[in-house]
Image (cartoon, rainbow, N blue to C red; front, top):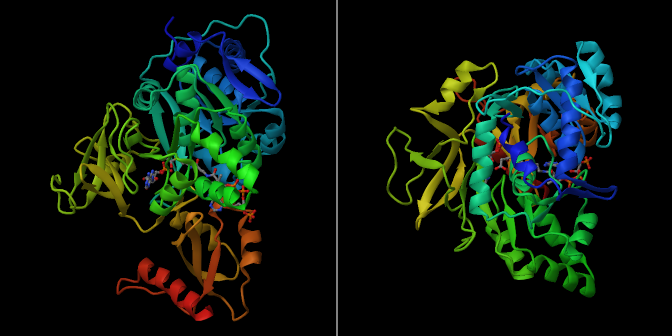
Length: 504
Ligand code: MLC
Ligand code: AMP
C-alpha cells in the first residue's frame, strides 16, 4: 500500500528519535503507531475520509505531527489553526475550510470545544502518548490528493486557504533538503508557529523527511533556546529576522562569560537561515561580526514554498536572496508585460514548478487571478544584481510583514471599523527595527474625545490575533484620499512621520 511521501520517509528512520522535549523523546516508529491510532479514530469505522477537512488545534511537538500524519493516513486534508488567534478568527477558518472534524490536544480542546459545539463539529482528542494495539486498515492516498490548507492574509479583507497536495509538499521539502544538505544527523529547534510553512515545511517537514531530531518549543522562549544552543543541542537554526534582532539584543546585554559561551556555540552550528521577511543588511553584518555565521537568506511564500536561496556552499551576500532553488523556475515580469532580462530592472517575481500550490480553497476567481500563463504571481518586486535576486518591495500597499507574519491592512481595518468610536481608518506598515514593519492605524473618530492606544489594543485583542493589533495610533480629522475617494496609503504613512517629528 503506497504511503503518503512524508510517512514513507518516516519508515526509513523508525528507530531514530524524531522529537526531543522536556517530557522525553519520541521515535519515528512511535510517530507511525501514534498516527495510525489517530487515523483509526478519525475513520471511526469508515474506510477513507475522502478529503474531509480536519482542523488541527494541537500544540507544537510530536503530538502535532502524529495528528497531521493521522489525518493524512485517513485520507483527510489538514487545516492547521493558529493557537494564538481569537474565536472569531477560528470561526472563520473552520467555516471557510468547511471543516467537519477538529483534532485537539486536551488543553486546546478546552479552548475550542464550545465553538465546535456551536458549529456542530466533531471534536477528536487523540491519546496524549503513542498507544499500543492494532490500527484499522488505512486507505490508499494518491500523491495528487490535497493534503493541507493554510490560511494566508493578503490583498483581500478575509484570509484565503492555500491548498497543497502531498506531491506539492514533497517537492517543497525535497528542494530544501537537497539545497541545504539536510541529513539524519541534523538537530533543529522548532519555535515558530505550526500554522505557516516556515515551521511546517522548512523546519518540521524537512527535519522529518531527513530523519533528523526536532526540538519543539511552545513559543519562542529566548532564554530556553539560548540554553540549548549553549548545550550544542543543534546543527541547524532557522528563524525570522525579528528573532535575530532579539538574539543580538540578548547577546549584547549578556555578561562577558555568558556572551562568549553563546557566540561560540552559535559559531559551531553548520547552518543558520533567515527568511519570511527581509533581513536588514545591518542585522546580517552584526550577526556575522558576533558569531562568525553568515546567515543564509531565502525567499518564499505560502503558495509556492521556497523559491530563492543564497548558497549553502558559496557566497551569501547581504541584501541578496540568491538564486532559484532546485526544481523552481523564477522569472521577473515587467510592469507592461514581458520578461525582464536586464540586471537592475525591477519586475514582479513569478514562480513555476512542482512546489506551487493548486489553488485557493473555494476561490476560483482568486486562483485564476494569481496566475499568468501558468506562472504564480507573487506580488513581490525584485531585481537581479550580479546574478542574484534582491527583493525591492511589494506591489500591494495593503500587505504588511510584522515579525515574519503576513498581515492584511484590509482585514485589520475591517475589524477596527467595528469599534464604536472609529468612523474611518487606514492601516499601514511603518518601518520598524525589531518587527520589520509595525502595524499603524490612522483613525477618524465619531467624537472629539481622545482615543488611547492601550485601550484600543485591549479592545482589538478580542477580535484579532495579538500580532495583528496596531502598535501605533494617530487620530486625524480626515484621511488623505484621491479624486476617486480611495485612501492614499503612502500619504497615510507620511502622516505618521510628520507626527513623529513633531513629538521629537
Ligand atoms: C508578537 N507580538 C507581535 C508579533 N509577535 N507584534 C507584532 N508582530 C509580531 N509578529 C507582540 C505580542 O502580541 C506581545 O504583545 C508582544 O509582541 C510580545 O509577544 P511575544 O509572544 O513574547 O513575542 P515573541 O515570542 O518574541 O514573538 C516574536 C516572534 C513571533 C518573532 C517569535 O512573532 C513569530 O513567531 N513570528 C514568526 C511567524 C512565522 O512563522 N512567519 C512565517 C510565515 S510563512 P503584548 O501587547 O501582549 O505585549 C512565510 C513564508 C516564508 O512567511 O517565506 O517563510
Ligand atoms: P506568506 O504569505 O506569509 O507566506 O509570506 C510570504 C511573503 O514574505 C513573500 O511574499 C515576501 O513578501 C515575504 N518574504 C519571504 N521571505 C522574504 C525575504 N527573504 N525577503 C523579503 N521578503 C520575504
